[in-house]
Length: 138
Image 1 (tube, rainbow, N blue to C red):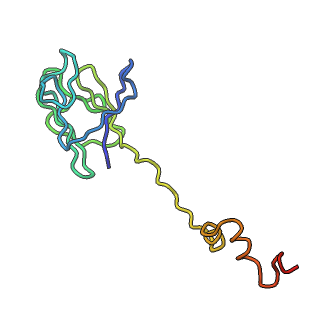
Image 2 (tube, one colour):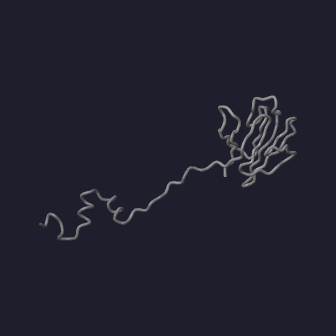
Image 3 (cartoon, rainbow, N blue to C red):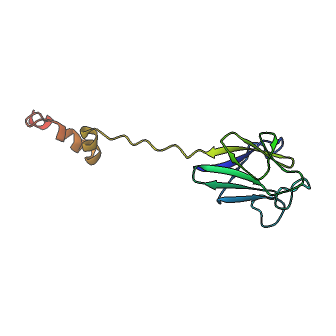
């Protein structure tokens, strides 16, 4: 399971997926943060999104503007579910699961199709005819 945050704010970034490549994803203006919004309403170390197996949580790190989950300001760490909305200063994200690419469907050929693939067209036609039934014997 790969968690991502979808940007919900209006503008050119709307709908962009922010992938969480590490288990502890730090959001803030500090250069050590993974996502660094350019807003004075975002604290240097604003919040941390943690992904451990199937569990996803967000922890507010004490910024003045706080961190919101589904519109409610949180204190400490809160468990998240797919579809929850995280507010970080003026930014709004939706928790999403990155969908893997569709698996290629493998179709097993029939015995006749497999034989035809192994032989060229002329050989396949001759191999499928009964003895004495060839065009050459006429």
